[in-house]
Amino acid sequence: MPVYTLPELPYDYAALEPHISGKIMELHHDKHHLAYVNGANTALEQMEAARDKGDLVWINKLEKDLAFNLGGHANHSAFWENLSPTGGGEPDGALKDQIDKDFGSFAKFKAQFTAVAAGVQGSGWAILAWDSIGERLVIVQLFDQQGNIPMGLTPIILLDCWEHAYYLDYLNVRADYIAAWWNLVNYQDAAARLARAKSQTKGLIIP
Ligand code: MN
Image 1: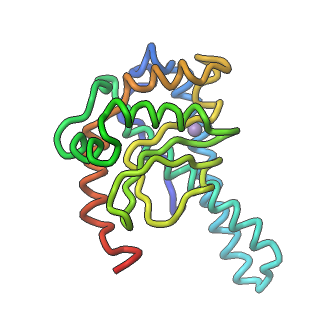
Image 2: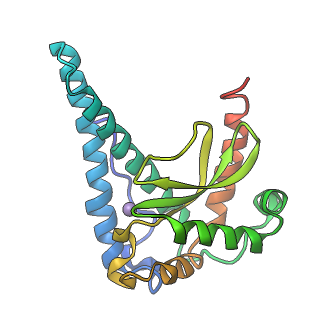
């Protein structure tokens, strides 16, 4: 039995139109995300075979395969839940309070997140994350599916900045994709992630 499985989308492919087309959602979920799931399972299987044979000469390749593909599976699994046909607007409650505390205001947070997403070089993600060490929200750039991220962060809001996420709809104009994406952000999902992160990560790295 495979360890990792492709989750169902919580809405129809076309539910996020006109901001993200059904064609992109179908390809992105059914092809791209599935490839990460399969890649992560294959990496684990190949590691097991290597251990059994006592032949670890390719272990560096397998480590990179696991990090890339499990990263892709994790990022997209959260990304789908982060989107909603009825999303957008502004957060309220504890999520709003935490954003105000750590960024000054929602407007300042939105400006920083937009700049971070626009500035991702090559393929990667912009992520609002809970830092369990500083006990605060931070915005980070994640390169490819796994790079440039310190331990101790839990994703709260993720934006896929790979070209496969927007090129069919927006060609090379990532700024338009980012602007459209703000209309889809599911702040209820983000608030639930923040509550889980706060309750489950305190003391995880530094007791
Ligand atoms: Mn993607």
